[in-house]
Amino acid sequence: MPTAETAPAGGARRKAQYHHGDLKEAMIAAAYALVLERGPDGFAMADACAAAGVSRAAPYRHFEGREDLLKEVAIRGFGRLAASMRAAKSDHPSGSIEAIAAVGRAYVAFAMAERNIFRMIFGKAAGLKEHPEVDAAGVGAFEVLLEEIRARYPGANAERVMNAALPLWTFVHGASFLEIDGAYARFKPDQDIDTVIDAATRGLLSA
Image 1 (cartoon, rainbow, N blue to C red):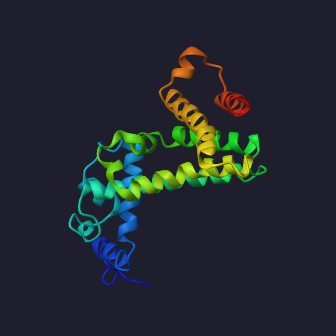
Image 2: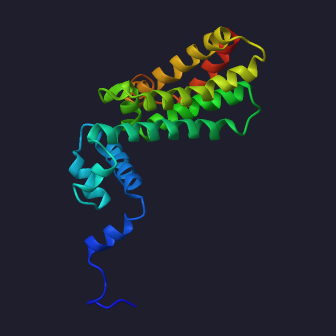
């Protein structure tokens, strides 16, 4: 057992902890948590370093600067959104109204649970959409819905699939912002958003 004389100091422990390549992930996790708490404009690179327990110079081995770090946070955000939608639809037959509605419910649930991340990945942080990796991650999240539409309409061409998907996405995206901004609570406090999504999904698909 280490004694007081032999035990490494806090800084030495951190250096040992991040020696094996996990500094990048630690910084991304710290920044993700800070965006959740404060929004993308609410912290500096130094705050992320402090939260990760590393020196202010250490992150520059992996990131050009704060925007580069936020890019990685955005990619993780889209990844988490996609994963939550995939998990939600997995309990239902592929292409069913139930599966498509579950994707929509998961979309809004993510917006509610991680609202600052949601706002950021859909345009709150200037310049993020210019990164090809962020754009690709966003397309990957949208692909979850497209997969279900393709399964519902086998053999449909790309235009038909997109024409079916866009109204659904437009609705749940707008509903997400209405929910996180408190609009539903203001006008109809007892409104259940999941019920709204289920009804809208059925209506839009039947149309």
